[in-house]
Amino acid sequence: MKLLKVFRDNPNERFIELAADTMRRGGIVIYPTDTLYALGCDALNNNAIERICKLKGIRSDRTNLSIICSDLSEVAKYARLENANFRLLKENLPGPFTFILPALSKLPKAFKGRKTVGVRIPDNHIALPLVQALGKPHMTSSITIDDDDDADYLTEPELIAERFAGDADLVIDGGHGGTEPSTVVDCTTDEPEIVRQGAGVLG
Image 1 (tube, rainbow, N blue to C red):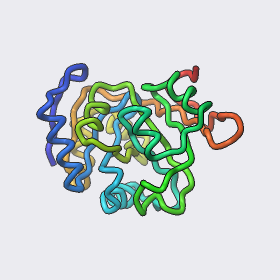
Image 2 (tube, rainbow, N blue to C red; image 1 turned 180 degrees about the vertical axis):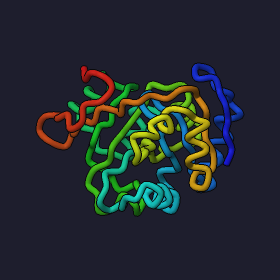
Image 3 (tube, helix red, strand yellow; image 1 turned 60 degrees about the vertical axis):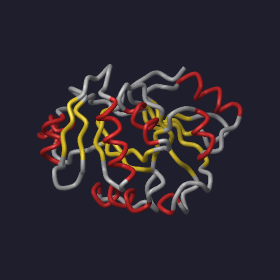
Image 4 (cartoon, helix red, strand yellow; image 1 turned 120 degrees about the vertical axis):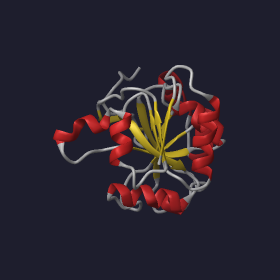
C-alpha cells in the first residue's frame, strides 16, 4: 500500500500517472472526489471491478455501478445520451452528481445484465486528471464505514490508508475529505428524477 500526498489544487503529475498505471495493472486506488473519497479501478477491467465489489460486499449483477469519465464525449461512448440528457449533464457537470443513464455494450462483463450505468464527472483537481491520465473511464464507488463511531475514516486519508491497507493498492492523499455523497439523478425515465439528494443543487 502506497500513500501519495498531493496538493489538492495542483497535484503532482508524476503521482497522478503512478495512480493511473496502478489502475492499468488491475490495481485499486483510493482518491478524493468533490464529495467523498472513493475506491476506483479501470472500468474496463472486469477482475478489478469484481475486487471492489467483493471488498464492499456487493454483487455486480445486483448493484448499480458507476464510472467517472473525463468529459461528455467519453460519456457518450459508454452510455446512451439523448439530447435532453446531454443538456442536463452539460449544465451540471463537472459537479457532485451521479447521473443514471442507459448503458451501452462497451462496458465489461461486470456491467452485463445491468441496463443502466451511473456517470460522474467530478469537479475535483485530482479525480479528473486521474481519469484523463488513464485514458478511459474508471469505475468508482465511495468508501463506506459500517460503524458510525469510525466516521473519521471517511475523511482522513491516513486513516483511510490504515483501514484499507490490505485491500487497496494506493491512496492519494488530497487532504480532508467530504462527508456528503453525490446527488443521484435517474435519467432513464421521461423526466429526470432525483433518487438521492446529496451535495449540489441540480440546475
